[in-house]
Length: 96
Image (cartoon, rainbow, N blue to C red; front, side, top):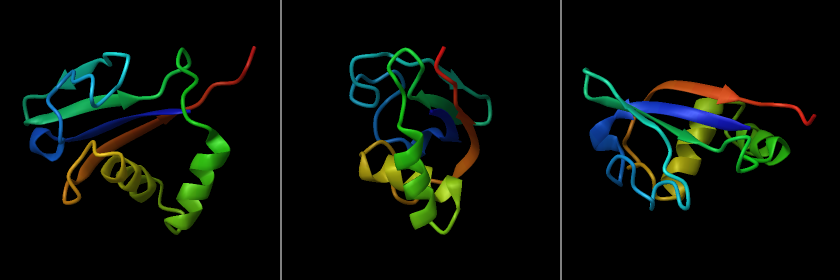
């Protein structure tokens, strides 16, 4: 699975397109006129995140998907703890 997160630019720890934010791959960053940015994490190309592991994180967050993503982003040093996710898109795919 993969996800795209949108929040205020100041909520991110690293600047747009930083290799520290997305090691090894420069992800697309969409900057919005309302001073928010969308950043993508995981992809079919990289294998993405394990859905079973992520489901456990969601369960630990009381079933709140946004809270689970927020926690992962904070723990992985990508966003500040006070950042507010305004939009979240979760994508999955099946094997061929």
